[in-house]
Length: 422
Image (tube, rainbow, N blue to C red; front, side, top):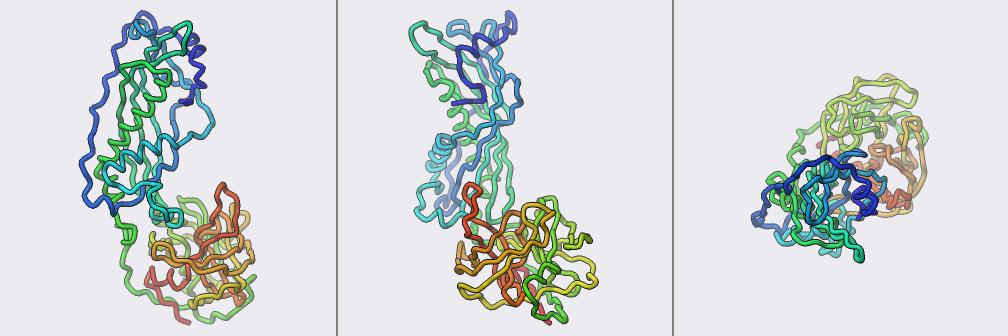
């Protein structure tokens, strides 16, 4: 248990600053929240606590401490000590899972196949914005310190949907916990108890429940049923894979940068939905450095594809599309802007490894090297025809594995209800 303090509590308490002859009353705790039962909870989304961070600034007062019998007389201030360390989420995850299970919600660990179904999970991030604490400390000469008191946490919960590749909700809670008896691990107990009370408040939140009960197999509110759109790719001829870079672009939006490629003579560009994010307008940059303003005219977060419209570009030929499924072992080439905008037009080579189906969505798997920034770029065959769009790379611990996923071009066009004709 760190709580940002390097908790050598003897030195912390002895080094704390007196605030004067002040009497501080016990902290009044917010009312506890008991979540109502959830109907059809068994069909809810899987929950996974993905990260926990504390947003307190270094030196911020996070509580007071006093001696066991005179806890509220002349209390001492406790100052936050920031640490650049990751938190062990195991205990916090267990608390969230315990309370979710009481409501019948599916939890991480009770699905033997969850490792192959990552998009089923809603990922939770807990950002602790404030800590209020009152500690009463027993300092015996012959035993370890004991702690009792109260702790209140103010948490912003961020809910991330991997299917939409975006935050779908933010929920703020404030709840606390009291220890009447003293324990050597009293600070841990206070922290975990306050976290549990906040988790209960989250599980009772209406917006959170709506997200949890949303069927991942159905379109979300941001998805649309697009009317048919026919695009023209006049004069498109097969060409070497290296020439595909001339029709590839970097896409710059409020979500960062990614890649895309020209699919029509009128200036339509395909990319990923998570590349454009919520931007209505994006910047499109060609490999020669020229730029254009693009409007996001269609987007399907579930299939993770989007269509950008720019003014018809002069001297730019759209890429030819091949909607037939590729064969395993076939040579393929990925084109895009990996890692940094300076690497635009990068081409890498690999083979088709397999075709996968996850959550009802088809993906082409390949060992061709891709990195963040390649998203939205084309995967072309040896004839320079686009067979898929780059979407994901499996990199546990940020280590490339050669397992990368691509959206079949036929599925991308279908999701946006697009037909391309020569």
